[in-house]
Length: 629
Image 1 (cartoon, helix red, strand yellow):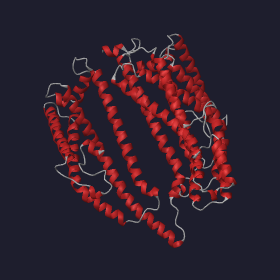
Image 2 (image 1 turned 180 degrees about the vertical axis):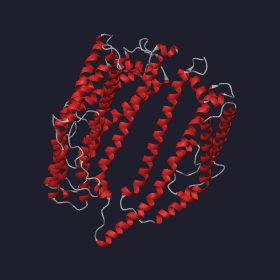
Image 3 (image 1 turned 45 degrees about the horizontal axis):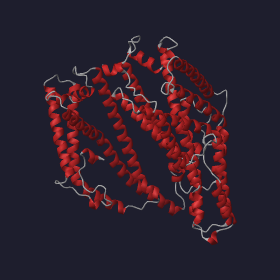
Image 4 (image 1 turned 90 degrees about the vertical axis):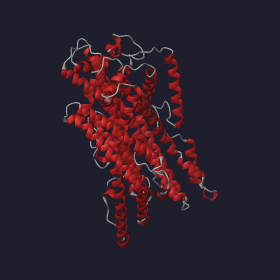
């Protein structure tokens, strides 16, 4: 990654052995890095020239400090690149002299941790740079430097003011300046990511030695001291889903008590609970807001676009009611889930116990952050529109923003600050509920799939020992208990699943239709295409994760097909017959089974509806006042 941005010019970084690493002054990577240093020096000269011809303040010194820091970092990375091949060869020798890892998980752990740190660090850096660019775009359009109406020119004039302080404006120079800025920004963030990655690598070597010493001590005495990792996870779905339920209750969903309890026995539901009353109030306010939306639509022209807020409100209202119904059943459902887990084979190690909880946490974090980013971009887009196309009745930009996002309310009532903030809080709750439907069904599907996976692992390990007929009887009964649980879970969440699929299908069709319109501004375009990409990815994730339940349920069939004739018995044949005839999958209110084939059906449906909608499509260029300003 660093070499894309002119850092660490080393050959052979993708090679399997550090012996293939090398550094050469004649290498094109090195010339790329040296050219980058030279261009940074030139850019620093432009900044110094502008500062010396103006007033020297803390704000004007900041870009000088920034450029000098990047130059020092780049020179140091080139110096490090010369030493890197020998350093990595020595690192490899040290690793070869260390004790062997105890499992495949320990071998992968360092690489997984480095990938996660790099992904999170660079994603947040990209988000920061994106927001910075949006801020500059908004400011340059709102307060243009020249009388020229071209928004792109105003953006580059503001962004590269130190360059165009000396030279006349030209597009190639503007894009070149932006390219240098991207490289500088990456280098600025890469410093921290790189030292964190090196620290993780060094710490992992000490941990490898420490783990070996603990194991040696355990072998000598017959037991070893338990660590926090041995007890932090019990492998249950109740434990894994707890963070998702905590977040849901912050947004008035799933009012179940006792979600922090270690076992499902502590779960309960009560209509007198504070959580329940908050959820009921939220459902009531959503119903009232839906009525206001219907009133707004009735007073305007009804078409595919105008009914979008109504569909959104009805979807959230139905989902909230379904989550309330599910909360009533949740304690009993989790107790049965816990009984099924107790009847399955034990986990082989603590890594398997923590796998489910870790997967759910990572997925929850990624999807919630992306949902929050989408809402943030939506807010920025709405603020941009409110500033450029203010209502003549509302000169205050804050007031114009609130009236714009809650127009269905202020058609009926006069504007007031408390009502505006109340409406904004309702929008935040509904937006989260809209995304949480998909997150929740994905987490439940992962939990069910993990049960089949746990049984499959045990069967694979036991197959090498030529299992007896009683083994196949026990495995079949365990498999049947998981299938019964899938049916009970499907009865409880199939309504939410149906709403999720219907909502995603409608949203994808509408967003694809909107993508053919001309975007009124860069802020609108950034928000729209991020929202569309996130929606498509979320729809695909829901389909694949829910289909995985069906895929996992068929895995024992592959195992049985590999048995020899002498290993076949009555129980194996009975197990094989059940696997071949039963269709185990989640459904959408029993209307359709969610398998991998459904994904093609959904894609075909989207294409069909899109072709129909295209016949009635008219390009809407957006607010004309934006184009005129």
